[in-house]
Amino acid sequence: MKMTDIIAKKRDGGTLSDAEITFFINGVANGSIPDYQGAALLMAIYLKKMKPRETTCLTRCMMESGDQIDLSAIPGIKVDKHSTGGVGDKTTLVVTPLVAACGIPVAKMSGKGLGHTGGTVDKLEAFKGIRTVLNQKDFIKQVKKIGMAISGQSGNLVPADQQLYALRDVTATVDNHSLIAASIMSKKLASGTDVIVLDVKVGNGGFNPNVTTARKLAKTMIRIGQQMDRQTVAVISRMDQPLGRAVGNSLEVIEAIETLKGNGPKDLVDLSLELGTQMLLLSGKFSNKTAAKKMLQQRLRSGAALKMFAKFIKAQGGDTSGIKDYQKFPGAKYTLEVIAPTSGWIIDLTARTIGLASMQLGAGRQKKSDPIDLGAGIYLHKKIGEKVKAGTPLATLYSNKKEPLKDVAEFVLTAWSIGTKKRKPEKVVVEIL
Image (tube, rainbow, N blue to C red; front, side):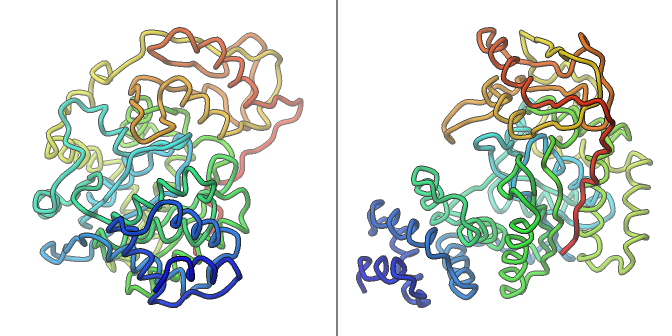
């Protein structure tokens, strides 16, 4: 089998066989296929698309390119969630302890952020001493002992995806549903959980600009999960404005803790409860959505979810004193308020602009090797549907670098649109698939 024949076949709109896809992924994983040929096939896939069977085969081959975690030693149905990435999305820090506090084991593999979207592992590193990467033995042991674990990718998990993502990032082939779905689902499937709940973002702050494209991606991933014998549900949620008010690692951790204390912003609470409800339903513990949601709300009110969060941080070596004293988290030397130029109602708040501005302050990375400023970020004082007076703050910028603050303030100001009539914000949950 020749790689040039495979490239030409897809270039001309052909359907790749299972053997051809297997040959390609094996070659990517073992290094026998050079980057230029891998990039050529990715571009052909980007332009000519893949059929459902091809996408499922691609996912399976990527999953099988490295280690697969066996969670059978953990009793019960194991659940996981995944977000396609958004601005201010700290739901994992809220949902995982919330669901675990209901007695459902949560085995969560997470990643680091890239671009204007944040990663859970980066946020967790705000806790001094925490281990964000667990080996398989420790991962399973912790879930069995306390009911949950969150770990970055360890060992040789889906190495083909690591190679392909690096190529997609530099060849403008990231935005393809088959490639996105295969990347996400191969990692989720290799992680070994029985249940996968997907949070598919729609809006300018995520990969999907509209509900149609978000629904298409969600259905592709659900189909893959079902064909691989995993219960899979997708929640389509809005990412036109940031989720919550905090954007940036330490700031988001604090907001997640406040949410677990019962003081969270409505959109973050609503989305967390919906994701948690779907996880409980798929676990088999509940058949009734209302009853599942009530249990989550009770665990939130009683403080059980917060206790589970503290237990999880401690189990992974983190300093839990920050849960009570936010000064323990990495902070910022410099702050600057972004001032409203006019009075009126906030009618728009562009999530992507906020995310890019936060990255410029140091809270995000353009390359996986870039360092992160855990104390950098943006706190939003005004969001859609809220009234503002001229001369009062729209947001506060945080950074340990003084130089970019003024330029970022000018840029971030463009994220808000102020009008004379109130616009009610849309519900954060669009639909469940």
